[in-house]
Amino acid sequence: MKAFVQRHCASVIGTLSGFDRLLFRGTQRMLATARGMMNYLWAKQIRLTEFGDWSRELTRQVRAESERAASDAGRPVLYVNDPSARKEDLAREIARRDKVESGLVCVLSAVEPCWSYDLHRDRAGKKLVLVSRRRKCLHLYHYLMHEELGLMHVRVQTWLPFDLRACLNGRSWLARQMDRAGIAYVQRDNCFTRVADAGQAQSLMDQQLKTDWPALLGGLARQAAPAQERLLTLEGRPLEYYWSADQSEWATDLMFRDEKSLALVYPKLVRQGVLTLGAADVLRFMGKRLDGRFKGEAATDLKHRPQGVRLKHRVDANSVKMYDKQGSVLRVETTINDPARFKVYRGTEAEPDKLQWRKLRKGVADLHRRAQVSQSCNERYLSHLAQVECPATVGEELAPLGTAVTRDGRRYRGLRVLEDRDATLLAAVADGRFALDGFRNADIRQALFGAAADKADARKQSGQVSRKLALLKAHGLVRRVPRTRRWMLTDQGKRVTTLLAAARNASAPELVKIAA
Image (tube, rainbow, N blue to C red; front, side, top):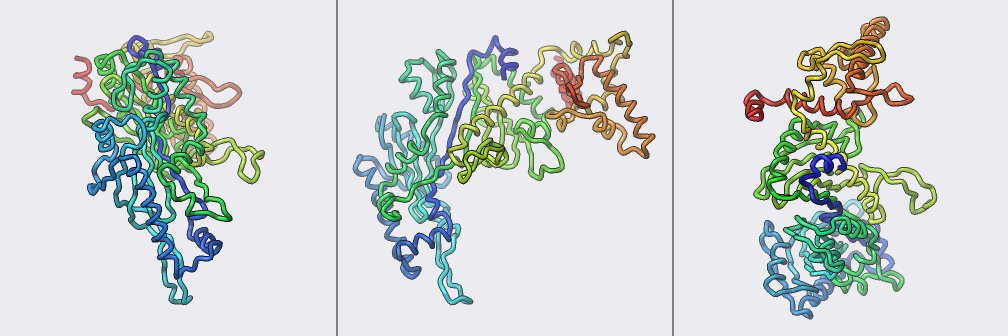
């Protein structure tokens, strides 16, 4: 990211990195599975024949007390029949109309899919069985103008197991923090186009990661669903919610001086991103490699929206995307829905001191590590864009390579980058598979010659590749990795191979248009 900011230092007036949208899920773990639910019913001495009446009475009380919070505050309860309606927009309009600056804005209800329980008659066993099924029930959205978080909502499922969803926005949260700190800013939608002290604002955003999430989310749960602590107890104690982050969006915003400054570079970034970023590159941004062990799906898509152009790269359920916001903000955003793709150095609940690299969990205990992973992904993406957005022309970058050079008393010929022999070599060393760990002689030999007929043929090909790599090293395009037999592209090598890839994929009319 530093390389990108340095390259555009005349236009970039500040950066901010932090959570954008955060979607939390609250689960009472004992009630989350059919087996756990059966254990709870046994502990409360509730028969399956009584389950229907018991659960309906719970639903009635949960719904009544949840809606009573709105009536006590004098706020509206509205049913939303249109599934395509944006509930947040409706809540914002109500808050604006009624000038709500703090507290409950409204409660919006809607029938939506959920996981709940049903009774199934086991004819073979001649008994009733409790099963978990996909069903539909009424959900209550409590929209709050929180004194610290800004506008956010808590969704209450009114059927067992009474799961909760809490959704907040890190940028709205930051606005409240900057108001208290006296930092001037200009906010449009959910981004900032101007911040008087971006460094201090970043420090405030970093403080969000130190939040006691269970305490914060538990307080919101008690406010939206006050009946559940009283109705769902075991041995005299209320069942506690386990909080996990179902989805996180970590955004890095680069604030440009004005719309014109961003408009000059953004089309080039989008074009080069489409032309030069393959599946291996996208995996690299996510800290993965494209090899035989990867069984998922990587894809890239470009979408033109009313707000601007968005370029999105997806690896299964996770993604990194780039788009222009409000004309003058370049946003790179990593969205994580499946954190198990990443690692965290931690112990277990049973053995907290046995530290090792394990799968990243959805639980809020690993949210700090999720932020680190997301920021690293954004930085790798911006570093690639810094290479792509090269200020030198193709001719200026490639012309010196055609001249012979002398290194350590030995003369090396010039490169013919547009001829098949050298172009194939450069494409091989720039393969995205080697971006993380570099490449070996054998890797390039396989790419150029395929499988060798015998050992003598392999030795001959290995010698040819060694001489080719020495040629690229003499021109400053590759370097040896110390104390290994691996090679990697230099910064110059990355620029050259990126320019060549773009030139190979561009049509003649496109090149003429660019030259004009």
